[in-house]
Length: 177
Image 1 (spheres, rainbow, N blue to C red):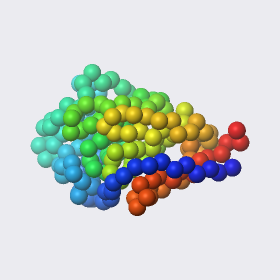
Image 2 (cartoon, rainbow, N blue to C red):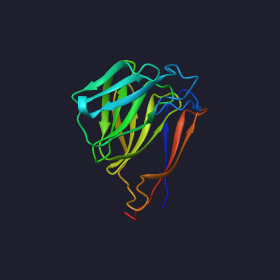
Image 3 (cartoon, rainbow, N blue to C red):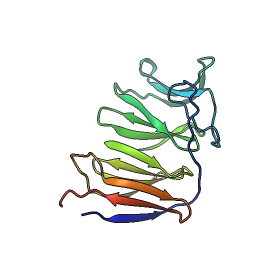
């Protein structure tokens, strides 16, 4: 059985690829916080996560120190290039950092996918525990559904941001529960 869910938001910003060859940098050229040569770097040996300059290799900003994990993957940036998401730990916990303020905002355990609103104020995160609406920068998380399909590893099958109406429409997965 499929259900639709409607959630309100506002704003617009479209993502573009720069194709510059710099790994894991934000590539939305028109974004408010776009910096063309800045990329994230996790340093296991120093237990820290930094933004670095691709040209010089120098640290630009330390996002977190004392961070130790043998599993660390950059997931991506918010459309405005302000927020950076990484999967930390083998259980795929999604951490989000505010790269302007230089701090971690929060995390969602065992996450699988993130969809940003075009204005970067809201994201929908799918996880093993359910799908969450995550509001930034306040770090407010609202459980949208606890439905989870263990075969597709998803909480829902589709998500569409409707800019004109200020909504996101989600089609939920059905597990027969």
